[in-house]
View 1: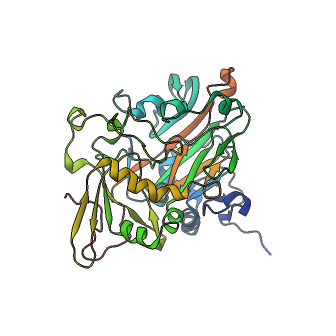
View 2 (view 1 turned 135 degrees about the vertical axis):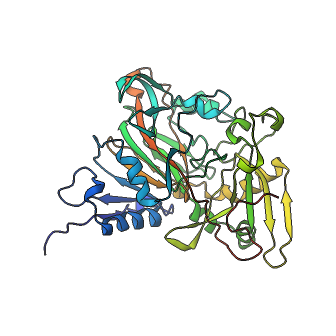
View 3 (view 1 turned 90 degrees about the vertical axis):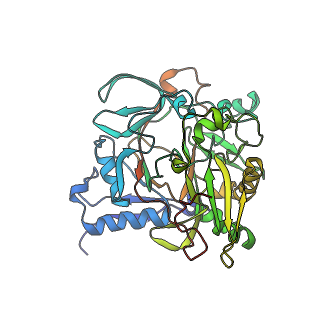
Amino acid sequence: MPESTALTFTILPDEVRQSSAIGAEVQLPPGMPMLDLDRLTESDREVLQEALFRNQVIVIRGQKGIDPTALPKLAKVFDPNASDIHSAGEKAVRDPKNILSAYKAGRIPRAPQVGIIGSGRFQNYEGLDELEVVHLDHTLFHEKPLTQEELDDGYTRPYRWHMDTPFYERLPGEVTILHSIRIPNVPDQKIKFPDGKEKNIGAGATAFFSGARAFALLTPEEQEFALNTTITYAPQAYEYIRQCKASDDGLTIPTMGKEVPVEKLSEWAWDKVAEHPMVWRSPMNPDRPFLQVHGCCVYKLTTRNPTTGDVTVMDDVEKVRKVVYNMQKKIYAAENIYAHRWQEGDVVIFHNRGVMHSITGQLAKYKEEEDRKRMLWQCTMTSTTPPMSFRGYEGVDDTGYVRV
């Protein structure tokens, strides 16, 4: 039998996927050690799309040396309508009012859609004379930090589950692409879950859970509520929560009182505030609903009765957070979380409109700076089309963009 010349993919082993419904590895065509989009056939591109939209996270190994300008082109394989602007804006976030500025992320000058994230100082890199990026410590994120004993025992947590979008002015991209340049030279770490189970992960692993799996875990009543509900996110969401701390699982903000008052936020307008369906439709999974919610940034819920068209609005932020958290917390179990164990050269593509993700890893405790250095490229471009509601019949919002 002649050797295949086509791009293929294989599902990650059951012991890795478990119940997450996440993960596949892409094999490039023979004779193509480095991804070359110009050499991919239309069939190859369709296989890439199938691999991603059916498995939510895919990895291409051994891509050390790939050109950064290839990543925006790769993103458009999955979203031809993606803009050429990073979802966080044309330049890296530097405004201290925005919690995203704490990462000190950089941008690659010849590929401004590609950010640089990680940990450590780097000299003369990709046209940047000096670059310092920060892997944030969990104490910035969690209301109850890990104890010193837990840190000594190698525990970490997901910091804050999110999708890549500012929730203001720009739409979430269909995909995010990450490329590993350098990984920390430190031991594995572990996450402890509410049921007592533990999960060993690579230090600095990127963790994911599937919105489809999250929806499947809801009760029938919760599913019906979610299918009929639109979420309004907080105005200038990341500025609004910049002083807030998350729950241990990173899914919500458990106490009120540290939010920046709306009247003290940077200038904003309602027509730029994000409103999205609670349940989204995937491009290649029309019958598979995805619960897609950033539980820390929720602000208001608008629910429509599909039969009568009656509308109910919940605008008590504390109550909104509790409702969303009670739905999302069911996903937080070891078997439902895929934590990507990075290898240098990995290109990971994840369905930003189908998964939530979080950074993990306690790196600051290691004394040797060279050991804790970490660098990733990140390409996430704002889309020009809003996420599609899973339900689109009369009486239920079919785009997410309504102002009530």
